[in-house]
Image (cartoon, rainbow, N blue to C red; front, top):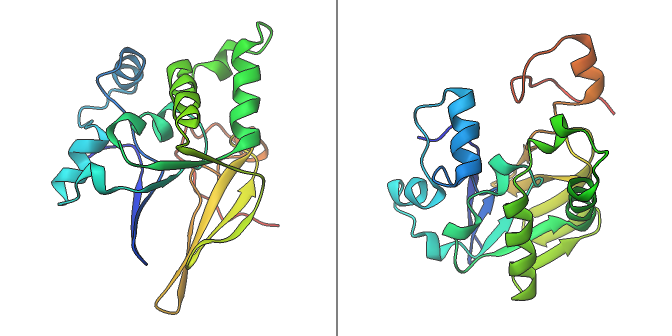
Length: 193
């Protein structure tokens, strides 16, 4: 329904998203979608409604990292509290303000999303993570990672005796890209410690 990932987790009195998709109507996203040639893009609210979830019922969003295709759908979630690695946000704010930071890296960031996240922080709707967070919610832990972005989050969910890892774009790291250019977000490879 949408080429941009978000994962719904329900239980223990919470309705949580890991990442929150995009706003395909915003000019920055429209251009990115056009460049990618994607034809089937829907906003976060439409995607949730299509599976019977009211966007207003999402109480928590855990952001893997601050790239446009992971945080662009924040405005569709009026009651959510957003969890983000503090270092991830501050590093991107500094990078976007640095005229020497390569434009090729800046193009994966919508500056409006960073401003929106800061507005939500001013409303008390942002919780900053400083690295790992064991049992952020019952059965949900966050591990800090680096590679695809400066300080992103991986989510580990334990349910029904099984453990699941939601890794965002962690698998795409510089050393792997150096071997061969697989394109943005196309490579999934087992990570080794």
